[in-house]
Image (tube, rainbow, N blue to C red; front, side, top):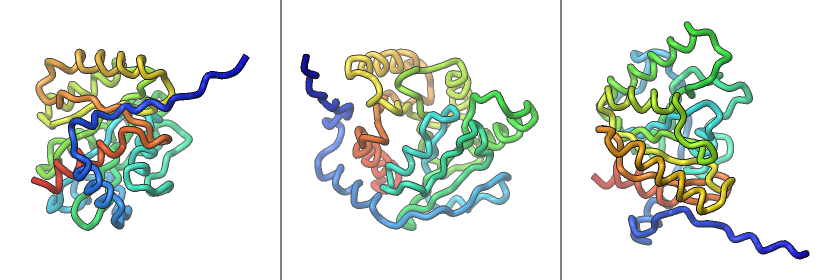
Length: 225
């Protein structure tokens, strides 16, 4: 019995961007990027002079891998082996023109309630206090879909009136028709949410799938305005 050849799915919606836009974004994200700082208080954060996009999600959903994949580096954003260990808001400067922001993960159980409240309060303060924040990308594991803790995070974003968009991670770990199902279910779940951007991106940091479109979307938001 022979194994059937593996067909690598393509989860991107190429109709959304032209080849020129995709290439422009690739070149932009290939420019120098550096870690700026990890902030634990609002008064220590960088000034609001540059546009920012932020990445949020459950602990171990793949935020560090996604950020590293966007800029083509392996170790820019550091993933921790201990869920919930990242308790700072980390800022990365890209091409001297914008910042990528890594928000603390949510939905873990090992930290004390007081610690959880402390840095979740920091995250909420960031959302309310950054007029230069263009969008929050909420990362959801494609294998699991939206969970209760994710819906609570979306509630907070709706209350803060911050534009957010769902990005499915690890989409290469399930079959293409399952990806389509998760995308459809997610779109239905956010349809009536006031701050949700009505498009779901399916990505794989490991395979690079969907990443060109995510880069193009960020460039359109922050650079091409």
